[in-house]
Image: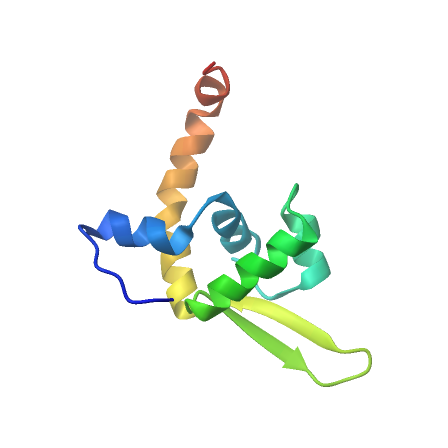
Length: 109
């Protein structure tokens, strides 16, 4: 991630999130490590290519840890770093707000 200058904390947080997929990936792995296929099933609607791209970005920004197990067949697991867990904690109230107001939001034309 290139060095940037932010106007406020929300600006920085939104930059790290970069769209809807990262939040959904964070939510999917909040309970523990998942393999790629498990993640793909846990995040409905995401393409394989998009999941790969977002996981790489999240690994580069320090949100996700990628663990490669050298075995046959190869095994790779993704888990949250402490940094990723702290972002997930910060997003939890936003998710609760969305749950509370989901019907109203869905009704917006």
